[in-house]
Image (cartoon, rainbow, N blue to C red):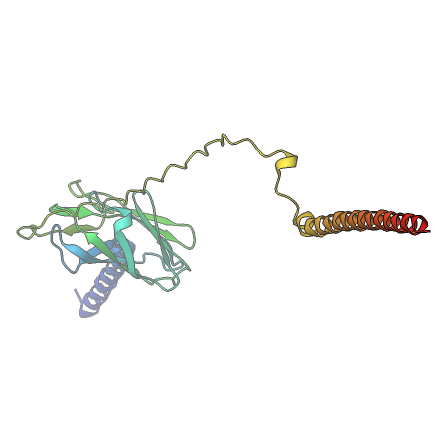
Length: 256
């Protein structure tokens, strides 16, 4: 085999190898995308733990718009608070987890967020099923639980250390018992009869003018009595005067 022929064969082999490697890398790109979860305190029954989630982008033309996380048993949606997330994204609790979404991220940008959990459950492993939605409507489900053979889209799994000595589950705080309302007293019907119009409280105007009328009546009665007394005295004086005149006249006639 000539040297030239050997060179051509080597070049062809190199070209084929490069092409094959490129194809493998291209096909492996989307398949290598996955969702992960980490904790600052990966220990059972640990409290106020920060969990960090990363959803790797697997689309070169669309960006993430929403993540739906199904919480494992032992973590209630009400025990989760959003700590960090993409700008403009909000967390909304659901029946079995929460949804985090907002304006679409740029294509190829990973979706990362952090939550604070009130307490981790007493378990060795906990899985967070994750459903990712892209701006073009594509949905990627990372929901396969560990233990399956050849899981292609496994759910993010967090391995936990054993609980610290003396650690116990937090009991739910009892709801405040509403105060029992005081019974409304039933009004007792009055046994005192309502006053008749004649027994009603006199009108202030009438009461104010009543003394004036009484004083006037008394003045009139007093004037009448005084007049009668004066008239009687005059009559008596007239009779006495007439009698005295008659006696004096009779004496005068007898002396003649």
